[in-house]
Every structure is written in C-alpha cells, then in structure tokens.
Image 1 (cartoon, rainbow, N blue to C red):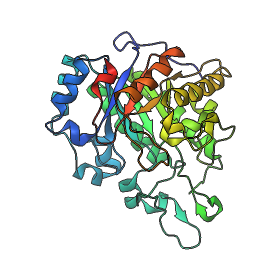
Image 2 (cartoon, helix red, strand yellow):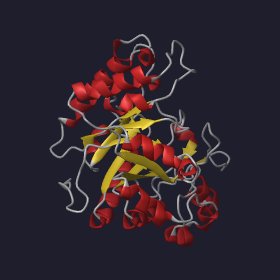
Image 3 (cartoon, helix red, strand yellow):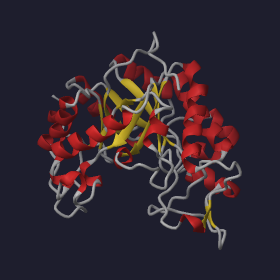
Amino acid sequence: MEKTKGFENNPKIPVKAIYVTGKTASGDRLDEMIKMIDETELNAIVIDVKDDEGYLLFHSATAETLNPEANNKVYLSDIDAFVKKMKEHNIYLIARIVTFKSPIYAKNHPERAIVYKSTGELYSDSDKLIWASAHDRTLWQYNVGIAKEAAALGFNEIQFDYVRFPAIARQDDMDYRNDTGESQTAAIQNFLKFAYENLSEDEVYISADVFGWAASALDDVGIGQHWESVANAVDYICPMMYPSHYGPGNFGLTVPDAFPYETIDRSLKAAMARNANLQSAAGIRPWIQDFTATWVEGYIPYRTKEVHAQIQALKDNGIDEYLVWNAGNYYHENAFK
C-alpha cells in the first residue's frame, strides 16, 4: 500500500511522546506536562480522544449522529484553546482512539456487539468493558468520523489503539457478528486501509498500536494483529514493547521486566526483521514503560535509569522515536534529558 512521504503543513518529525489522559488534560497538571516537554527532548503527547470507556475529549458531531451518549461526558469544553496552547509550545498532537473496545457504542448497539453464542450475553473483558465487533462498518465510520474531527482541529496524527479483537481463549463460543465472511486479520487490515483512505485528505498520519509480541508471532495470535498486515496499512506501527508484558524465558531472559535494555533491543530486532519483508513498511515507533509492574514475579522498580535504558536500546538500533506509557501520567523527567 502506498504511503505518504509527508505533508508540507504537517512534516514528519522524530516523535518522542508521553501519554496523557483526558482527565490530566482538563486538570491542573497539564501545565506540568507542558513544562516537562519544554525542558526535555520530549516533543509530543498521545492524548485520549476516545478513551477505553468510550468517552470523548471534545463534543463530537459524529457521536451526536451515531452514538449520542458518548457526548454525555467530554473532558474539554474548549478544545480549540487546548490545541492552540499545544501549538504555542510546538507540541505534536497524537489523537488516541480506542477503536473496537467501544463500550458505550456496544451498549447502545447490542446487535453489533460480541456475544456468547449460547446465551446471547454481551462479552466483557477483565475490566468489565464490552466490545463491539471489528466487522461492523458503522463502527468503522464512527471511529474515522471522530478522527476526521480531530484532524480538522489541528491534530497531527491519529493513533488507533485496541485495533484488534479481544483475546478470548474459546473463540468458537463467541458470535463476532461477522456478516462479511472476512477473517479477523482481514477485518483489522481492511479497517486500517479504510481509515487511511478516508483520512489522507486531512493531512494527518495514521498509526496503530499492536502487542509487542506481534513481531515474534507468525500468525495473528487470535486477535487479528498480524505484523505485516498492519505495518503495510499505516504510517507508523507502535508495538507495546513493555518489558513487563513478556513472560519468563522470552528472548532468552529469565524475567524480561528485569532487563529493560535487553528486552527492547531483542524485541525491536524482531520487529525490524518483520518490516524487512515489506516494500512500504510503516515506521516503527515503540511504546516503552515508565511504570513499575509489581504484579510480575521478579519485577524491578522502573525509574530514570530503567526508562533511559529502553530509550538507549532504541537509539542503538537506529530508532530515534518512542512513546512512553504511564496510566496515571507520572513520568521520570530526567530520563528524557
């Protein structure tokens, strides 16, 4: 698939971003985030435009038509002022859109939600959130419509997260509302192609989050995320290479979480090898962790040293871009200096 080489009014840059929630963006800590970006090598934020629960950063005309309840809770009443403030600080804006884990939409359109075949009960994940189907073309329009609104407001990039099917062990028990006959892998790639085609005129880049181990798995690991299929359809592929997300023995490491440099180095090499299979591969821009995974046996605390080790592993492999995740938006500033 042919990709854009860049836009005159939105040039490509080596993105170094932190994740910011709508709650943080609407509160007192926003200025703290901006100050940290101004004083470090950071230059971007990934902000929830449509979050895990389906709520929105700003009032959406698309939602008003296709999913009005999502407008009942918006984090910013003056989105124009927010974007203006970010631009004044030369901050590259990435709109995170949680794509198919879409609880409000699924609740209001249960006939399009994933259900158990035996009971018709809505499927919910470990966070008790229900999922809509990635086969649903109306949901495609909903997500892309919100993305187009973000682009019109001045966002530089649209990032589709949870652009996958839920991880369910017994898939035969589920009704995925597949009236297209397409595979899960095809559904995800077809959505990303649809998004790319519909957003190209808006001069924004398209990125997609995938599990880090998508680079090591030969199939779509049961969720529709096949590396080449995704990397062929977007500008940037963003594997979640959090060391805490790899199990004992992965990459020959007893506890990958305890080896931040080595885990990033080895997982990135796997990703780069997969990209070599494509003529028009997406740029690789990994997610790294700035949090301590206390639930992992043998974990280590993540502070400045551990965050910097991950960044160094990327740089040593020629990748000068990264996205940093901390769910509460508390970061070790010195790691980015």
